[in-house]
Length: 483
Image 1 (tube, rainbow, N blue to C red):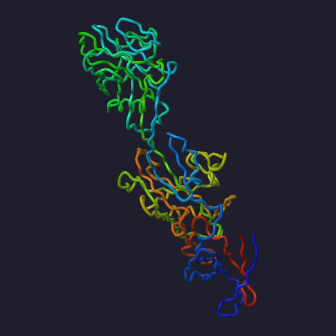
Image 2: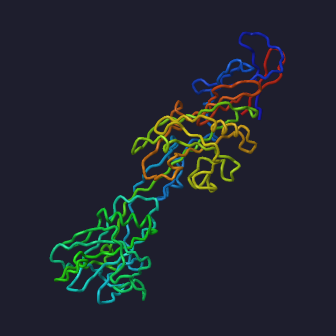
Image 3: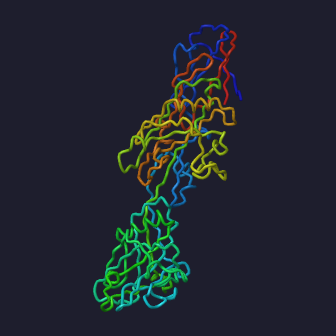
């Protein structure tokens, strides 16, 4: 909407004659305090610049969205909690899950060579008494740990009920290979009348955890046990099925008594129940979002060049950035996608605005002519045909968001099949320092004019926008301005 007319007189006082040639009334800014008027030469004789980087407008936002399967970060709002940064890449989130189920939820029992043990027995036992062998069977449900987690530590603690060892006893822990084992299993059967392939339990020795005890509480936390937990996450749908056997049992050494009795999940007080603690890293993915208002570019413009610049603030890297994996891909979001365009300051990984979800979590975008930045851990400059196409498509867009360019920035590491459990993230400036704002520079031609190095900055390109005047009378040029 046109809001006022401005009369312009050449500074040298020379009268101007009427003309039908287009005269572009441009805008520049000095010191971020207002709009100065510049008349750009027609016919492209001299490429001038028009700097658009002052003021503010809710249409222009630079922010980021995050997702981590280990916690609820997926629907936090960094646009509010961290308004001054754009984060792109992946980082490791360290998390600890602890399990100590009660009798109703647990599977913990022991196998006895000559007695069917009831599932609610108050103790679980490992070792032997003469020729009688005892083996502990346990199933832990750790399916709430994300499938992309990397286990860094794991510890299982059994509290002593009765100490029957006379010397150091070695306990081996293995993975049970039978997937249908239940709590009322026994030496012969893993479920009801369904028999083990081998009496005493079916297990694999490909991963072995080794612990020794001289009595007292038993803590199982060696590298082998960590591997058993990782295997359960990676290949067993989060079911940690284990059997614990003494070395003397394995060696058929039946002399004397070497056995430990531990409290079960039915123990009281509850602190005496078996417990499991798992420490793991889970990747947190960050993707940058920028919206530029390009409505100051004439609708008939032809874009000839475009450059996007992001200025680094801080970073978190485990290793030197990989030239390929850690490139930043820039995609264009578009209103032709149902959930694509029109996100606001409430944007999250799941939602593009309050109570309105993306079509695809993590942001909807058009996967065409992806444009890569030339750096990872530092100032990133994006140029090339892909970005030109994005800007041109935005200028040409005939939808309700005509002239609004929305970009989604994704680390190529995030966008590939490579493991994400690494710190490889860069935080760029978005709104704290005016000189470090993300800047989009655009060259274009329109109505026989050439506009070079037009800069569109965040948080907002200038509110005062120049228009073409195709007819003048007398000594003054009449230009129209709108907001």
